[in-house]
Image 1 (spheres, rainbow, N blue to C red):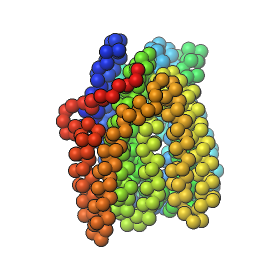
Image 2 (image 1 turned 60 degrees about the horizontal axis):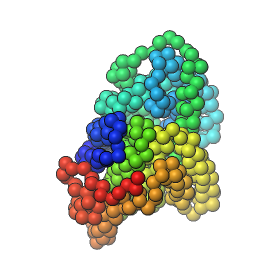
Image 3 (image 1 turned 45 degrees about the vertical axis):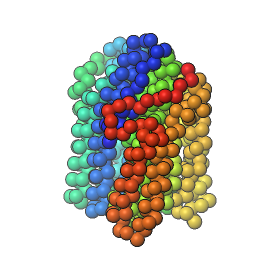
Length: 510
C-alpha cells in the first residue's frame, strides 16, 4: 500500500524557479527512495504486528507485556543519548575526511560502552522503583543494544547521506525477519518476557553486520577530538530534540506502571500499538527521506516548502485513514488483533487516535528545521513538548486516575500535545516564510475527503451493532475503502490506482 502511495504522492512537479541541478535531482529521485522505504516499512509493520498478535494471543500475558514495555521503551532515549546526535551531523554537514569519520566512530563506541556501564550499575535501582525483580536482568541484557548500535551508527549515517535507501531497506527487512523469528521462537518455547529482549538483540546484530557489509567504509585507528568538534556541537543540538522526543513519548509507560501496575501497562500499550505504532511506521517512511532531502535543497525555500507540502499529503492520506478506522472500530480491532480482554482499551485508543494525526504531521517538522541548519528550533519544540507532556502525564494520572485509570494518561496526550504541535508549526512557517493559510489550502481537501468515508463507515458500524466483530469490521473497512476510493479523486483530486502524481494546482505562494 505504501509503495503504491509513494509512486503517485511523490511525483514531485518541476518548478520553473528551481534552476539548481542538485535540487532537481533530489525532486526527481525522492519518489524512488520513498518506494524502497515504503517496502521496508510495510514489511517491518507486518512482521511486528504478526509477532505481537501471536505472542499476546498464545504465550505472554498483559502483565508480562507491561513489564517488557517498561524496559524496552526506555532504551530509545538511552540509545540516542549514547549516540550524541553524531549521525545527524554526518548527514547534514559537508563531506568528512576519513580521520573525522574514524574519530566519530570511535567516539560512538566509547559512548556506547560508558552508557552500558551506567545501565548495568543502575539496573537494580530501576527494578526496585517498579517493584519487579526481573527488570534488573532484563535491563542488563537489553543494554547490549547500546554497544551494537554504536558499531553501525556511522555506516548507517553515511548510507542515509548518500540516499542509499535501497540498501538500508533491504537490511531493515532482514533484521526484522531475525527479530520476528527470535521473538516468536523464544515466546513459543516458554521464555515469556525474554522474547522481546532477544528479538531486539537479534535485530541490532543484523543491523550491525548488514550496514557494515553494504557500506564498505572502515574506520582508521585514529582519534582526533578537535577534528570532530563541529560535528559534536551540531550533533548535540540536533540530538537533543530527538532525545527529548524519546523521553516524553515513552514516559507515559513509566507513569502508567507507577500509578496503575504492569497489567495496565499491557492494556495501555495495546491501545498505543494499535494507534501510534502504525503511524510511527508510516511517518518513518517520510522521515527517513525528509532530513537528507531537506538538507540538499536547503538553499531554496520554495523547494523546501514544496517538499513539506508533499510529505504532508502522503502522511494525511495514510494516517488519517488509519485514525478514522480506529475511531469507528477500536473495540473490534483490539479483540480481533489481540484478545477479547483488550477491548477495554478501546477508549484509550480513541484518545490516542486524536493525537495520532498531529503526531504524524509533527514528524515532518524537525527534519525540516534540522535540514535548514536550525536544530536549536527542533530542540526548543521538543523541550516544550517534554515539559508539557511530562507534567500532564503525572498530573492527569494523579487527578483523574481513580476515575479513569490508565485512560487518564491517554487523555493527557490528547489535551496537552496540541500545545507543542502549535509551537512547532509556528516555527516551521516563520523559518520557511510560507503562510499558514496557503499551506492549509494546499492540503485541506485530503482530510475532508477521508472524513466523508469515515462518516459512512460509522453509519455501517452502528447499523451492524449486533453482528459479530469480524464481520462488522470487514463491512466497515469495505465501506470505508469504497467511499474513499471515490471521494479522494472527487474532493481532493487524487486519482487512486493510477500511475500518476498528485497535481498541486494551488500556487505555493513563493
